[in-house]
Image 1: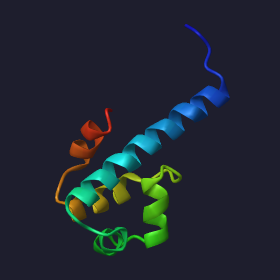
Image 2 (image 1 turned 180 degrees about the vertical axis):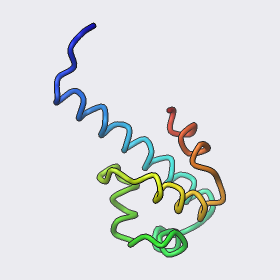
Image 3 (image 1 turned 120 degrees about the vertical axis):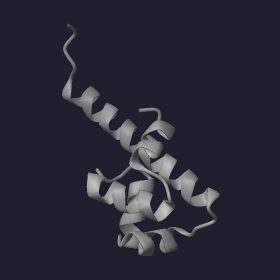
Length: 84
């Protein structure tokens, strides 16, 4: 089995976060919600929500649940949209 470098693993992780953030952003925009209104509904700071959508934060599962509840979908819906 080929060995994976730490840098390659980090790039893969970042790619997953970017895909997840893009999926959350697309659902938010489809619903016509502002980033601030989604953050408020999910109980998350607006600046943190922006970082999540840009893939800059490694979001916890509980925050995924809070955000997807506010979006009216399930975590699995977002994971499928993200290509996972």
